[in-house]
Every structure is written in C-alpha cells, then in structure tokens.
Image (cartoon, rainbow, N blue to C red; front, side, top):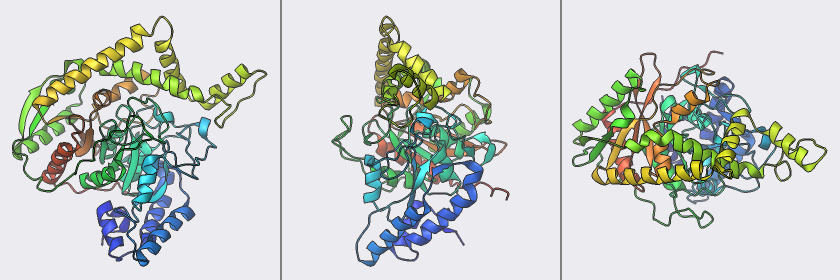
Length: 489
C-alpha cells in the first residue's frame, strides 16, 4: 500500500477532496516524516506542528461545510526561508534575521493559502540565497537525501531535499542563477524557474532584483505545473510583474512531439562536462527524437561570458539590496561607541563570509571610477546575450542541455575555492540573465546512484511548450520516483 507521504500532490488533493482521507491525516503523515528525517538532512529550519494541524483542520472544516478550499486543499507545501510568511520566522539562512518574524505574507504565500495548501514550514538555504550548495546557511548545511555526505546544491537545497525525501510533495524555491534547478538536479526531482515577471516577487527577500524569480519544486512535471499555475499571475505590488494571462499548462496530448524543434547549444557540452552527465543527457535527447522532435545543433557563443556577467550583476544588486541591514531597522544589532561602529559590528556579526564577499565585489563594481568598466559593461554584454538567445529561440522551440556539469559533490569539497563553487552555475545562469523559463528534470543516475538533471529552456513566456516537452520526456522515460533509503536509527 502506498503511504500518504509517498503520494504526489495531485493524488493527495483528490483523496482529500473525495474525503477518502482527511487533510489532518495527510498533515500527520508528513509531520511524522519530518520527525524521522529532518535531523539527518536538516531540510527544514522551522516547523510548527500545532500550526500545521490547525491549518489542516480548517481545510477539513471547510469541506464539511460544503465549501471548496481550492486546488491544493490539504496538500503540504514547504517554503524557502526567504519568503515572508505571516507569524513565522523568515531568516534567509542568516544570523542577521535570526529573530525576525514576518508580519505579512509574500504574494506567493497568499496564493498558496487561497488555494488551500497547508504550509509545512520554512526550509534551509544558502544565506540570502548566495551559494550553490546550501553550505553557506548560518544554521548548518542541508545534506543530500541520496548520500548524506554530499550537497543538495543551492541555494534552495532545503526545499529540494524536503521534496526528495518525502517530507512534502511540493515546495517553493527562488532562482537567481540556478538556485531551483541545480538542487532539483542534485536531488533527482523537478525544479522550474519561470519567466521573469510571471510570478510576483513581492515578499521575496531580495538578492539580485533583476534576476530573482520564485518557482516550484516537485517530484513530477504535472505537480510542478499545478503549483506554478497557483502562484503565477499579475500582482500590482510588483512593478516587474507581467500583466499577461497565465498560460494553460499540460493541456493533454503530450505524447507526440512531432514538429517541435529542439536546439542543442554546443557551448553547454564543452570539456568541463562529466562523461556520465554527457552520456545520460545524450540518451534523453535520443528519447525526445523518438517522440518526433526535430533535433538540431545551435550556438550561443556569448553564454561563455555568462558566469563573468552574472558575478558582476548579482553581487552589485546584492550590495544595494543588503545595505538596509544596518543594525537599526532589522534585528541583529552589534555594539559600538558610535553609529558607524554599530553598523560595522552589526554587519560583521550578522553576515557570513560568502555574503560579505559578494557585498565587497558588488560595492567595488558599483564604485566611482569602476562602474562603467564593470557593472555598466556587464549589462551591455547581458543585453547582447539576451538578443542572441532570442534570435536562436526564434528558430527552435526549446533548448536542451545538462542542468549541472557534474553530479552532487561532497560537502566541504569546494568551500575553500569560491571560483570552483561559482562554476557550478555555468549552465544555469543564462536563463536568469535572459529572463527565460527553464526546467530541470531527472534523466538518470550516475554509476554510484546519484541523480543527473536534464535542463530545458524556452523563449520568454514559453512555459506551455516547456512543460509539454518535459511531460513528454517524463512519460517516455517512464521512471517512477524512487525515494532515498531510510536513515539508520
């Protein structure tokens, strides 16, 4: 018999709607799973069981009263800890916000409540979303459920690990340079970054405002599409929020891809790619060809500059966004004889090494005499990259590439080498710099059993074709999600 925690979001919603089980039954099953797993992987930073049960009982009460609580009624959903959540901690994985409890909900959190979701808690992350391994969290790293000596990726590693281990069927993350897709690839689940502007950023604690985007993590494509449909749509409180209507995702009839053009960007398959990743992604390409897709090589030469551009633009925006954390208006306050001493003390104690590094990089890139040479030039290259991406995606419907150059690396392996850590984002930053949608889905395992991710990218607001191709591949591969082995007692 399939346990409740093993079921996907759609089947749980149906079981609750038909009253075969109660929302409280589902909540209890997942709370028990959190209790047995979280000490081993540290996916959640905060879970309040009493609040989870209250929310579940309210869903049951609404059903008993004949009301329809929404498409996610009773489904547990985890939230990355940079999403403002009323009455709950929102720490961003940082000592700076360790005691901060939000008094209001982010737009996506409000959407989840309106859809009837049960909010399970806040998940671990790299501090202020700055990292590729969830090792930069001030509260310790999250471990990969498939090998607890390895990283989950980052910065949404807690959300990805929670979904992969069966602690929740759905989670939200944020993606600034790959922070949803890379953890999804390392944990063998589906992770999707929407088009910039499709999902409101209101209530997302900002890292790099022109790059950040909130998106779903799930164990299958259909669940990811369901969650995206719930959170997407215009929000007047976000000036960058698109007024376009949300496309209908997964209309059905996705089996054939006849007439769909898939481009293979040669720059994403260079010498830095692990042989097993290359071979497994190649097999996925062949599977899509069997479904009738037209495969052709394309070139995006400017993407070779993506890491350099990203690590100027993102730290520059972070330097500006994090200036507000001065010890006066937000939580942690250090000691000092003067206001300046207090600022220095507060920021010195509140921020970790990686956040400090990026603030310094960004402040330098924005400083007088260097702005044009660094930030200004990077934005020009970014504009050229976006134009190149748009030209190529006029000729093909979807781009196919690996999500990451390697499988999950060992905890601590790259912490002393920032450049090696930054290069983990080499295959994911393009979508953020171009504002395009991208999805990572599992396409196989390495010889030692570690998940490998396939990345698909589409033109801006191309979510419909992106999900169609992803669902077709998932059906063709016919892989049923395999949960990690249970932790030893």
